[in-house]
Length: 288
Image 1 (cartoon, rainbow, N blue to C red):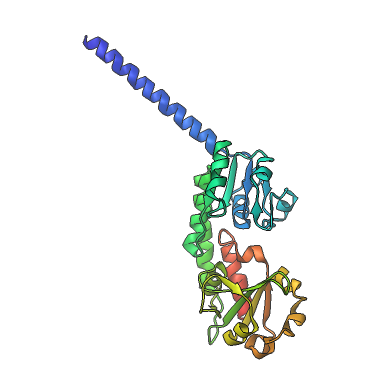
Image 2 (tube, rainbow, N blue to C red):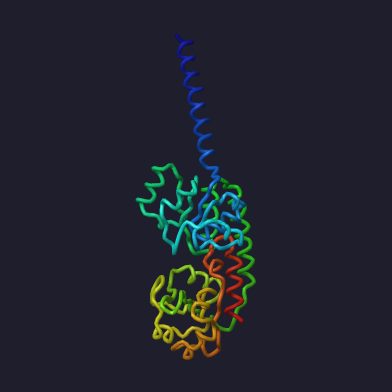
């Protein structure tokens, strides 16, 4: 009798081992994404920095760096996505900013057997390294993610220790522009707000959070020392000289001193592995 019990116990033991083995095997296969779609510039840049750019099959319209990413097809238009457009590229992993997909979208992809990982972005130094680790974990290479996160931490610490400083903290107003008809200013809590602080400046807008439409009255009231825009945004307004002639600009410190700064958009909103470069570049610009 005891032999029979022992035999049954051994069978259960081996059965359990086999279940665990196949479970781990399936998880490993699931984690090793070979056809990845990224739906934000920060996610795309991080995938490249982790060494997995070769597995990208498509990206969104905001993903323009590194240069080779521009050879990939785009599955979005003006930040809007369609399940059909994404499915056309047969992805086994879709990385999307948290909140960009509805519950219905997530259910659709799940029902089709497509793994979708929402990635949360926090606008801080710790948030940047968390972001890197999230993307790496989704791809299935936590070790490489940890390595890149630690490298980024060391570089940002080094950058912060070498920042330029002035007698006073300059007030910086960020304007997002897509032509005269589409102009918004960045308030508290935005990614640009966080970057301005890290670079040694102060956001000129403290009355509201996120973004609000640009007005001449708000411009004059905030009286920024520096006006910051994405390079494509300033270009859409006719360039620096044209913008200096906009109503109210001449009444600000920035206008009087012609302190209109244009910078690369994807770099400024990265808040991932390129955060050290963004902080350094902005610091140089606002303390010139």
